[in-house]
Amino acid sequence: MTQPPRLYRAREHRMAVGVAAGIAEHIGVSVVRVRIAFMVLLGLSGLGLLLYAAFWAVVPLRPGDTATPPRRDVAQLLPFVVIGLVVLLVQMQLFDSVGVAGTAGWLVAIIAVGAGVIWHQSLPERRWQNSGSLPLPWLSAVVEETDRRAFVLRFIGGGVLVAVGIIGVAAVYSPVQNMDAVINGVIFALVGLAGVGVVAAPVLWRTFNQLRSEREGRIREQERAELAAMIHDQVLHTLALIQRNAADVKAVQRLARGQERTLRNWLYKPTASPTERFAAALEQAAAEVEDTYGITVEAVVVGDRETDERVGALVAAGREAMVNAARHAGVQTVSLYAEVEPDQVSVFVRDRGVGFDQETVDDHRHGVRGSIIGRMKRHGGRAEIRSGPGEGTEVRLILPVSGNGSTAERDR
Amino acid sequence: MVEQSAETTAPDDGRLRVFLVDDHAMFRAGVRAELGAHVEVVGEASTVAEAVARIAATGPDVVLLDVHMPDGGGRAVLEAMRRTHPQVRFLALSVSDAAEDVIGLIRAGARGYVTKTISPDELAAAVRRVADGDAVFSPRLAGFVLDAFAARPDAPVADPELDQLTNREREVLRLLARGYAYKEIAKELFISIKTVETHVSNVLRKLQMSNRYELSRWAADRRLV
Image (tube, rainbow over all chains, first blue to last red; front, top):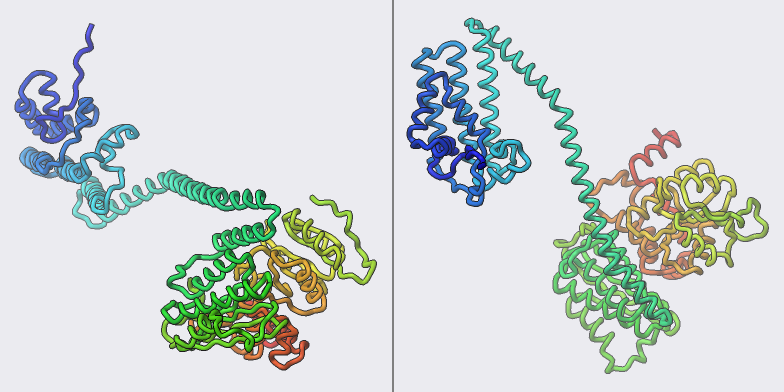
């Protein structure tokens, strides 16, 4: 025994949603006749429209058709307008547009057109994507958040419906020509709306809270994953390297120091681009010296500013001074202090190492003379070197700058 | 919980009595081992409540205080102890060198701030200096202070008269930030070490009152308003 053929809405030959075409196919008559029947029924207080809507709501779309979503078609908007107008005309003809029936007719017409517009404006592929989670597939056109235009449209449409509803209630139930009565009706309608709002508020609030806590949980989870990735990529690898190089004190110190700096920057410092900011550039230079020579550079930078060619030269000279201290001073710690003032930028590199006598440095050694003193001179700054055997060394680099571009705050 | 077997309540020799507050048992053990030769560690605590109770019970000279702990951190300990035990001095010892942590603890009343990478000898020296009533400024802390007091036209300044550092204090801080020791600063500026210490103490005093709330309380205490 075969299943009796089920009633489906058709996709082909349709004008609105395929109800008429589906019925026509099901009972084997022409589509035009079914449509005429609907139109006739429409005259009986809009029965045809109600039937059509009922069919629309309960009759499923033919399975298999969903694979080819319908293309957006302005012509499909036409039936809604036609239906609304016809309902209006019929109501005016039959009831002279007075009383409850007249008002209801207006309402039905407006709702029909509004629903049609919303339906038409929602994207064709979006109309069906929620059909699994919603009891009625076309509801997705109403509840789904789409683009801004749809939102505005819906907002205006909803507002018009509410306003029309309130005025309708007022007009129907207080047909006297008394403004007070109308106002009272409106007020009671507002009270009704407020009541609905009060009833719905806890549910809305709970939903909102659930969504928020879910989102917060997701963000936390994301941060945790990021931290886990960071620890895996860097900390664990560094610890493994330290275990393998446990005998090499220098290597262990270098690894630990580098890892400490990375973590510290990651935890406490917003990073800035070393090519743009002076403090970031200097700190990067200090980090490179630390990594290359296995020493500690105690960097303190007060203030910050944009870099340019001259400030870049200052950073390079400071880097050279740190390299010299790391190579020749024979110490584990070098102090780096930089200060950005409105009229000058200064860098001090100090160690407490062996020191040297500047008179005894050979002429062919270019490290100090060329890379530090000469470089600073070329860019309009000056360099002083204070050192003596056994007293350690301090290199002072001063670069006068103009006021603009300089900031005293660390707005990195 | 860690065993408190070494805890004593009375000084038995001339050594400094030091208390450790840190929520990492490993770190406490490490500091205890490093400092053991120089000072007497009279107790340890891993939480704020425990610290408040035990510091009151043992009465140490110096408390080494961690910044980040559950239930309030070092600041909560400081605020709980400062009024009742003004003779106890606090030295912040933290792995964090974020400016707000450092300055926050100093404002709460710590006499100095060193990071956990400090060498054992330097830490012992810092403890001794704090016990003697001086402030301990690491180069980094000096840098933060200079940063905080740097001339910023748009930043809120509580009270220029009290807030601003004098030129001399600024100079001392700059040299500190450059890695100079107190002795070297004295030599550089042709002043005595005592004067350097006075300047540093003044900076600390100004730091602890550098917001409006502190200032108004300070003024009210002295019946100035």
